[in-house]
Image (cartoon, rainbow, N blue to C red; front, side):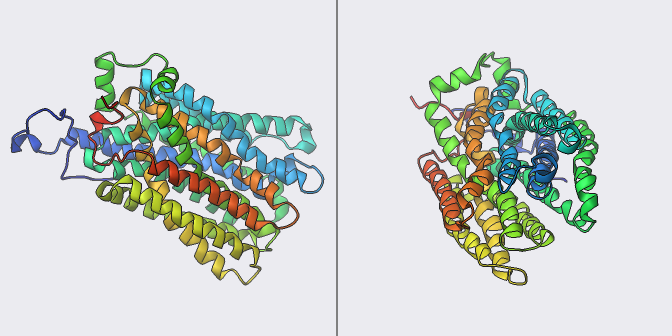
Length: 459
């Protein structure tokens, strides 16, 4: 994929520097090429990262319970869905580790290591024998691989987003950084879409080998992504930090001392991401097991809705460059609060052959409302921090917020229980999203701030 911006260049001059003559304002072809490479690499890398991450969520909702968690009643399904959230436990640790590597050594090395770890862990999941074969070791190995996936995911999207926004022209940061999360959405789409044709195969085949195919295929894309990452260059703003020896030895301590409020606000803003687990995992299980909708139709709904998100994210990232980050982000949160209640209400009263309203609300929820907040956070979150701790600041804060989001399918399953409590599930989702909106309202607007001034302390 090629992302072009043939008319602008990033202004890296400090604000007190006099305006340059017109000849100096010609586009910097090298910088724009690096910006495009960073955006393309971010898109492909996060596509793979989130494909790997979410094929497990789909498999957990449909297949893994009888194979690895054969508990009685609904306990087995809760355990299977809980493994989706387990990976979020190590995300904060991954954020600290990759954040340190990215802020001290370099963004590129951190991103290379992230993608290799995710690819290896995913491939191993596809090889694990079932509970019937090796007993308790089967779920133990699955959980360990999920923990490694979480460790990797703790650094991938924050690093890609930071690198993309730092290499982009000042007035195009929202658009370029949005391709990182567009890649995450593409990975989510692929993780659902790949199971659609597989679901047409006999159930016996899917439970024996078919579910493993998406995991084993990931190794091919890992190789391609590593090749793309090898061609990246470090952002100029980060190179300047290293050149002037302004890197921070322990970014976490520096952040806790100097940017605690920014970290709390970003962690709070990240809560809206619970919609990913609720829509793509919990509602998949709920729609098939409670509403009686077929696996294929629910997977198709998830795929189509996220395809809409994929299309809208760069558009909304571009819009935030024009009107600001806050208006787009907060509007998306308000839309999600209204639509998530309507969506689960429609799903609770749907059934085979009566799903048209579920489709409409699901597409509106994910393709427009969710996309608005989702397309902005890859640029808005790292803009809250200065270059020397930007990777760590975004990664740690984002992953702290994602701990709750990661367990949202299991939390929703517990709230729903045996009584079909869709109202409780909707209020849980609306509450988290409302916190995101409030934290955004109390965060500074950064769309028009030069990249070199982002995160600067006011004197």
